[in-house]
Image 1: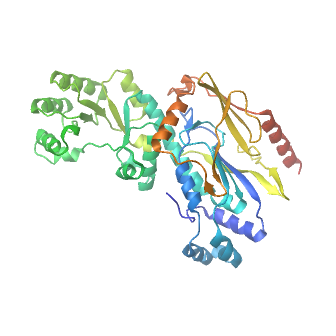
Image 2 (image 1 turned 135 degrees about the horizontal axis):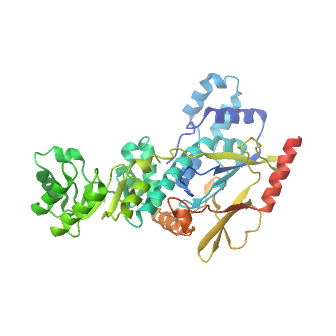
Image 3 (image 1 turned 90 degrees about the vertical axis):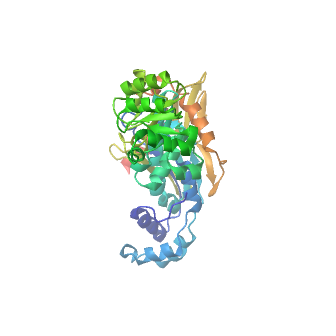
Amino acid sequence: MSSSALATDLYQLTMIAGYDTAGVDATATFELFVRSLPPNRTFLVAAGLEQALDYLTDLHFTPGDIEWLRSLPTFKTVPAKFFDQTLRDLRFTGDVWAMPEGTPFFENEPILRITAPLIQAQLVETTLLAIINFQTLVASKAARVVLAADGRSVMEFGTRRAHGPDAALHAARAAYIVGCSATSNVEAGRRFGIPLAGTMAHAWVTSFPDEVEAFRAYAEVFGDRSVFLIDTYDTVAAARKVVQSGLRPYAVRIDSGDLIALSHSVRATLDAGGLLDTRILASGDMDEWSIAELLSRRAPIDAFGVGTAISTSRDAPALGGVYKLVEIERDGIDIPVMKLSGGKATSPGRKQVWRRVVDGRAIGDVIGLEDEQAPPDGRPLLVPVMRGGAVVASAESLDTIRQRHHALVHELPVPVLMLRARETYHVGRTYKLDTLTDYTGQQLRDS
């Protein structure tokens, strides 16, 4: 899904107008990374790359975009060449390296690196951050929920709580790649091939004069795949009615109340009535903590519907991903650059991240310069995905991404995967990167 070239911050456009007017056409390298993990996160999961590549592939300004920008007072003194040539001809022609979607990663590790003419590399900052920050945020939250469910199905039900239809669509995709089994979002099902799941609302039950009549009418339409919502009035009484009616739903859903006590009572009622195969689905403001609590109390729940907690990452609703210049061409030479800002200093030079894996278990990551030799047992995490503005990475199905994520996340140390992590994953830096950082910083302080 592409985005308009105008879906950016104004200062990106004022900067590229300034670069163009000043004749700055250097090749530049920017890296996208997250400075620190959100609370209660021990790892993040890269997501959104497919949409990011679509955006870069389609990047252009329409004639209408250009004329509208020309009319703005901000651009009143900008030379006509910027509009009539630079914006008219602008396309993304750079190289992109990135972590494949589904890859777990950690703070300060570049997950995407762009090398391109400065005007192009600068312009795309805002949109890339919007795409990758959001989808990575949702994927990271959903991964925790899936881990907490311990093999039970988790269905993503967050469309109505998401921050708009586009956010809901891509939240569904991000949740699916980390292991959610289905989504309620029909457009996500059509566009991405994600399995769909849904039951009925309380409005269905209350629109009928009798609860059993509501169940029976639903079953007549949807047959043995029916899922009945049984907590509209009295949950346990509704379970008894289902048994007594002779109906055989695929599942029943409980959306409120004491889910531990109710699930035990409903399971006993269904089993006593011979509905041994009827599953119990729980929903209602669930997250990884409530799921873990239910399972620790042996609640006989087979699947979970999770909405707001996933689609908004409710406990940590924003990800502080940043996109920083690390290298710029000057007089034909690539010069490492960095920021010295307090609390926001960056590291210079094009970087690679290696994951060290021993006997099938990740023992730590190493951040180093792109041209360094891989450390022992190290596997590079950044791979080329675009060259010269053309996508070179093979198209992947969501199921392929899901399988990769499952393998990579379970490669991490078990304590890192716990809701309350018992250890911090080790991320180190190479001597060469530290030396370059110290040297560049000293040069800047002395200048």
